[in-house]
Amino acid sequence: MWIFVRSFFTYIKGGFAACACGRRFAPSSTNAGGLCVVTNQLSDRISSFASDLTTMTTLSFVPELLGWKDGRATIADKGSVPSCAISASMLRAMNVTVERSHVGQTAGKALEDAIQEHLIRSLPPTQSGRSVVVSRKTVISDFEQYRHLATVKKLIDADETETLRSAIGGDYAIKPDVTVGLEDDQGSRFLHAAIPCKWTLRSDRAQNVRHEAVVLIRNRRGRLPHIAPVTAEPLPTRLASLARGTGEVDALYHVALAELEIGVRESGATAQIRVFEELVAHGRLKDLSELAPALAF
Image (cartoon, rainbow, N blue to C red):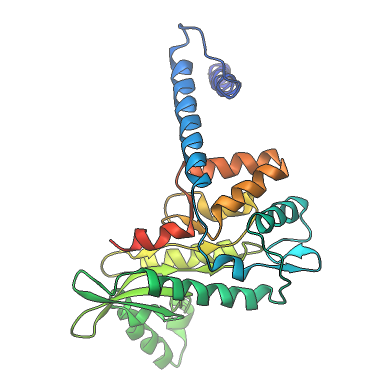
């Protein structure tokens, strides 16, 4: 039995290798030929998305967020050669030459402000007869789907034994960086979208986004809101830490996807190119310009 299983996986592995090299199997290898067809279709999708990226225009405010500091792009990880190379190519592609002092949390706040202003300008004032309200750092219990969490918090705070706090915790009281709410005539506001904004995806930032998403998914009473994180991270392998998977987020939106592709390809880093193509081809990584249209209906 073990010999059969090992032979099967060797067969499949060989099939993928042949597809990657552009070779087809002999007609007798029916299943492996199917793998090649799928691989060729995926290759066509990658080419199609690459063509779309060449015509994509980065939003005008994005270059104003980026800049140089100590000879490196402000989004670069100085400890990573690919990160420095890719981010430098991105800035050159956008003709960004200005020096910036903001990094870290300061840069992150600037990104949040920019995303809020962009959505205020880009989204329609009303949707389905309700007013569109874009805000920052609004606790989710202010929205109808999560209003019950305010009651839970009161019960926990009133429990002098702290038994409830120990059993339930308090990590459900999250405040997404940017929210889009739909408010009706009675003043009830429904959470339409939660938009975490991460300048880069270092350390545990991707995990923080996933945690917020899980809270939004598990604790809702009603329709699930869009969960659409935005980032300026230049390294595809780090983007993959959040973009891969299908459960927590709609997709990951990048502030300058076309320039990111330029940077990734100019870097010559095979692993980064492969991951970038995978994320784009499967619709897991999109440009920021696609966010507002996705939220408009």
